Image (tube, rainbow, N blue to C red; front, side):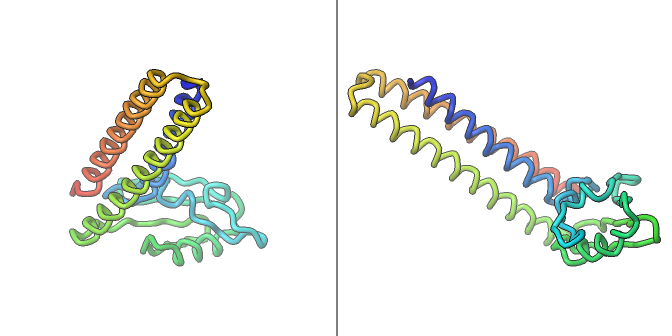
Length: 185
């Protein structure tokens, strides 16, 4: 019973880590990364569609992205979506594809991005603590309903805390890695 509860909590915590990692890939660092624009929503036949479903995105140079739409008629819509995004990049449209040149980040912009990363890390830590809180409440409920003993409850709570500590450490490592990427000149 407690094992199932711990397994469920671990699955949910792993999901929180995956969400964090996918969010952080969209944060711009010094070099070009297709994840930067993959999730930009483009107006396509009246529907908001992620860019990655409308075009192939490649990295021809370390500071440039090349976006080749599968359907040339979407070129203008893709260009408009990139301009209205918060990336601050100007697309160069040559009629066949769109080229995005990434200028080097300024020191102030790097610090801003690091703050944003720290904010996302804290949101993930809060999510992990919420998962722990729910699991601890369930363990106490099991004890109150006489489904487990007091010793089992204490063991379960200890295991839950170890699990939370492990995932919190993982969040810290991910954050340090991303911060180094951003601050790298």
